[in-house]
Image 1 (tube, rainbow, N blue to C red):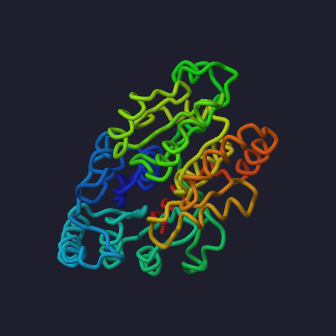
Image 2 (image 1 turned 90 degrees about the vertical axis):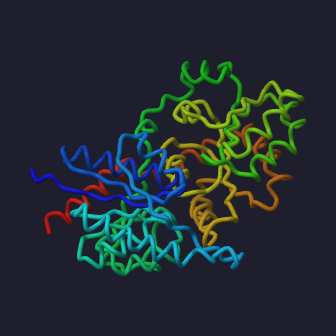
Image 3 (image 1 turned 180 degrees about the vertical axis):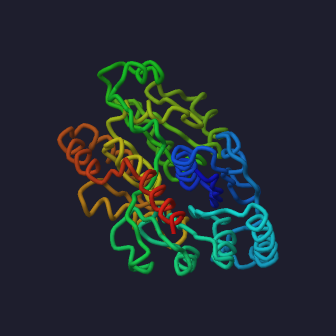
Length: 367
């Protein structure tokens, strides 16, 4: 078997990095001995997470374009030019057989360079609403792997392959309310559990919603597992230390999401594509609070695609501080509704997404 070479490009958030690592693992499994190089954005979390997973990464000085604060874009053009030149050097030196873009700042320069050099490219669009960069990249990409229906609104129909979004392997092997999970979070078997998780960096609105409702939480018999994210933990921890709430399990980051999902009756989260794919896989009853701070408001589109199938509840970011926790406490007591949400979201799971994406990449190698 030929020793194929692949570049996987993108990152910026866990929502891009975890699928990228899943695809890389799938390529290693299918093509033992293949070489994989990641290309990320300097200073972003992929520069730390990717080497920790055992892969080589190089960074580009690329940065995002600020639509609201135009003055912040003074360095955008120089960084973009510098990134295009570096991407060209990287692609020419590494000589990949296929380049895979998963979204994030670094995807743009790398896929544009690869397409310009005639190297096959695969775009993995995780969201239900494609961003500007991916719409442009889609014109040149050979194949576009998607996770939602009706994506021919954004991409040429003949290039689209429905694969679903890859998720972390450990989430396919969950035992509901395992003894290990009860012990890990110090929860007794019968207690209802709500998991509040705002992504690896945290979500301000979810944290504010919790802080505004501490008395309501204290009076309930529900245990809250609360991941604050690293940006917020240092402010929230002293507040809870000064006024403890015994039924809150406060964590900066949850290393064992498999156990968190295992023990939770209800999940409150943002509506990033990767998170939604995980919720589908673990059959979680969930309340989604779409982030308003994302390109093209794509999280609202992600959430609405589930709400339309009665597979999740949505609370708007602007009303979350007042409404979210009371709604969650009411819902977690309604076991019939939680079961209905769980059954409906389960139908949307794509457990073989990584294999299907690797199939798409393999088809380009044959050609």
